[in-house]
Amino acid sequence: MNSQPIRSPVRILGIDPGLRRTGWGVIEVDGNRLAYVGCGSVEPPENLPLASRLLTIHEGLAAVLGNFRPAEAAVEQTFVNKDGVATLKLGQARGVAMLAPAMFGISVAEYAPNQVKKTVVGAGHADKNQVLVMLKILLPKAEPKSPDAADALAIAVTHAHHRHSTTLRLRMLEV
Image (cartoon, rainbow, N blue to C red; front, side, top):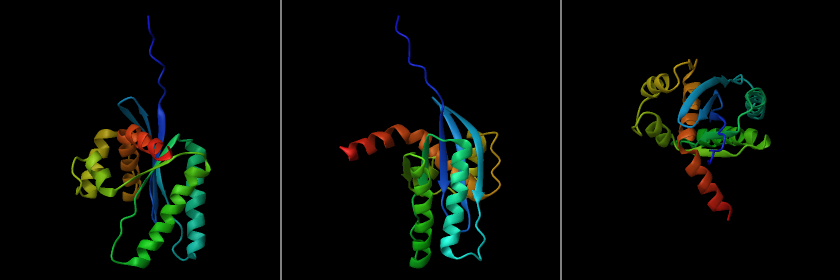
């Protein structure tokens, strides 16, 4: 008689980086089952200098990582717009969002905004309301207080669906 290995749930942190609000969402995946754990956002005061805002984001994410102890993390890739300065600043917030889990020894996957929407809604150009409606179906206990927290949960759900192929891709790059 062969017994199957015991599978344990995996806790995933999704991060939607931003200088005004960095959303975070934590889920657990056990096979095909998704469970909501928590979500919120880190909101540094806008009157702080850039370095202090980045520090606030780091400290907020470090607190989330310490409290929820995820095993894996995923971050949304930067959306490049026409304003180069704004894109650069968003990239700095994204760097902090990737650094925080890495400092906890957690690998960080990256997903394009269209891939997140396509995974959660089924269409790569879905609007935020469509994403929120699908999140309510996938994670009935989730009640994100901001669009950034909802986006972070969607990023975590995307990672739950693509984590095996992402892990394989990362292993291939290391060879």
